[in-house]
Image (cartoon, rainbow, N blue to C red; front, side, top):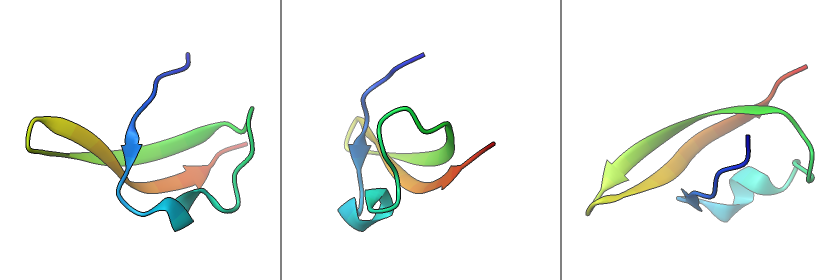
Length: 42
């Protein structure tokens, strides 16, 4: 599944590439969700 979310800190993405499987946490602020932590799985 592919879904787009904003990222609270763009440096969270520096070690990821398209196609990586990830788990993440997101917080809701001002009616929008933003990824706050992200990690590769597999």
